Amino acid sequence: MIYAVLVLGIIGFIAGSSLAFASKYFHVSKDERIEVIKDMLSGANCGACGYAGCAALAKAICEGSAPVSLCAALKDNEIKNISNILGLESTENIKKKAYIRCSGGINCQNRYEYFGPNDCLLMSQYDGGIKACKYGCVGGGTCEKVCPFDAVHIGKNGFAEVDYEKCTGCGLCVAECPKHLIFLESEHKLNVACLSIEKGGFQKKFCNTGCIGCKLCEKACEYNAVHVNNFLASIDYNKCVNCGKCIEVCPSDTIKI
Image (cartoon, rainbow, N blue to C red; front, side):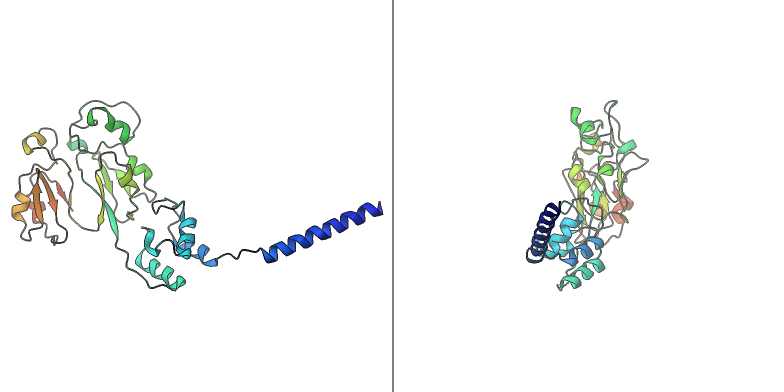
């Protein structure tokens, strides 16, 4: 009995000593900055940055394999704070927002009745989608479902709308839209909420808010910022001063602010 206890004691001593040796000589020091930076990120774990989550991004930032400003949700002061922690020079983060090129919804006729799940891809597959305008938002709300910041919603008018106070420009909604109606752009005030290149007369038959290519906006702009090509208006934001004259003359209420 005493012999067995002695043997077990020796084995325990050897095992404990081995573990102590291993923990000392094979110890991998943890970078404490990772946890600090992780807590400064959004915590949404949306994956829009290309990493598995906020912890993975924080680790990559500390290792220098990802830029400090990669997280779209970071504000300028947060980028500066992270840069200070890492001893890096702060870089300006050019903020982008999601802009939706459609305001059809209830203003646009349906091509057929749809009975099925509210999924934009499914609602777009048959005959170009449920809307008479093949370019239009089908209102399934897939963009709303993927937004981790509660910034995109299908409004009362039946098309996707963005809350710019909440939008971080992560781009997840852009990737999910089967109609490719959502664009990630630098912040601006005016938005041409249409992507149709149908002729005006044909467009007016089924959508009240679609661009008809009348060029009134182009003629009204004193800064050469608005142009109409293929029956669709576009705005050069490098020239636009947000005077709003294009909005005043638009007969279809296509240009939004």
